[in-house]
Amino acid sequence: MRPARAVASFDSASGMLRALSRFLHGKDVPLIGQGPAALEGVASAVLGGATRLPRALQEKAYALSGWAEAVPMRRVPELRSADLARWVTGHYPRRPYPVAFIGSSNGAMIHLAAALSAPWLPQTLLIPVRRHGVRPDDPQGDLAKTRAAGQALLDANPDLVLHHMHDANQDRLMIAGMTYFRIKWRRLAAAYRAFLESSLPPGATLVVVDCALRWPTTTVSERHVFQHGALGGATRQEYEHGGPRVADYLARYGAGRSRWEYPPADGESPEAEWGFRPELLADLEELAERNRWRLVRLRFGEPEDLSPVVADLYRSWYRRRGLPGDRLLVESFLLMEPWWALRSGSVPYWMVFNTEQSLAHVQDYLDRAEAFDEIRLVLFSHGVDSVGLSSADDWRKMLARARKLGVFTGVDTRAYPRDFASLARAHRELARIRTTYPMPRPLEWPVAEEFLTGRDELEWRG
Image 1 (cartoon, helix red, strand yellow):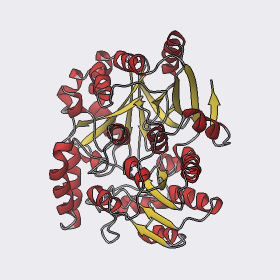
Image 2 (image 1 turned 60 degrees about the horizontal axis):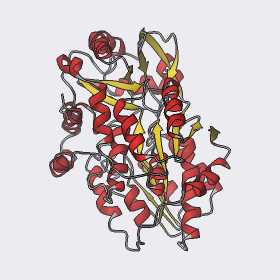
Image 3 (image 1 turned 180 degrees about the vertical axis):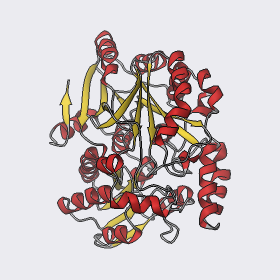
Image 4 (image 1 turned 90 degrees about the horizontal axis):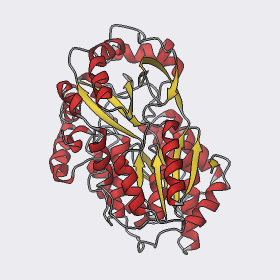
């Protein structure tokens, strides 16, 4: 099976890979977070038309758009990690780089890599797998239905660990007809090794992006764990024990229960989407030593810990170049545009999602930062009134903190969180920003490293 047909385009890792690789090719992202390019016009029209349908049909159209990408369960044993790694490296231009990144997905890191004109190799990819006969609020049924497929995937790929993730809160629509197999490399893939050796000269730096976030999991087999819930609006306690917000949510969606029943957790693992598995480090250390590279670990506790640091780095960089640095672009999940951020002189601040926790982090950043004249906000619509989702009114109050202009960008607040056309609309509105600047030369790595190592939010090892 071709990797491009197996990896979800609607996931953080693939969306970020596409945004960064297009940037390194000197291109923007016409349909933010989606691909391949040949499907952009069709996807935009389908998702745009969905917003005019009744709510139930909107949700079904959105779910079907994801289901169409999912791998039939019978074909899961055909997947090969070597093919997936070659697919990843094939995105990037082949040229020397003074620095490269490998490891956890992170939107702020993508903006850092763009500033440095550096590639990133993800440790984690999402393989969506079709399955039927399991309701979204039945995590135990999901595991039972797909357990054999997961084992077949691992039998064929001894270098992978499978984090089977089930989140009925944020992924409700998508998991109605599929399950989420997040794979993580525990050994360095041959294609990754070849790409790095052909791209990094002696003396270059290889940065391991090490998000330390962990989550309760159930051990299925030696290299297979099941994760119920994920970082977002609901807390770990609510996923495990329920509560008033969960009961209300389940009642609104006619689940017939007041809390989720899931396989009991027997430990913790790196979080499926964002966490880094350290088994990969041994191969990276050997490779760096043999090629005379510096190997450093950029470690942080939660994904958004890096966001204020990179935002401040951009602002400092702009001002050294004589730019105002008074525009803030707040992005969410895979809705991110490194090319237009730099072209418009916007300070990028990335959020994991549109939740109360992410909003609180943005507000905290605005409390500490010098005020911005302009604030633009891009919101990812996942189609669900999920636990902990911040409302359009909540976001409007944040935008009011701009001194001159605070606007939603590509967001139809009447349709949110079912504003599926925002995937295309956000790019169009970013491209209409009037005052733009020449694309700068890449930021020097020693300058960036000195700035980053001075921040308490981050831990440097190496």
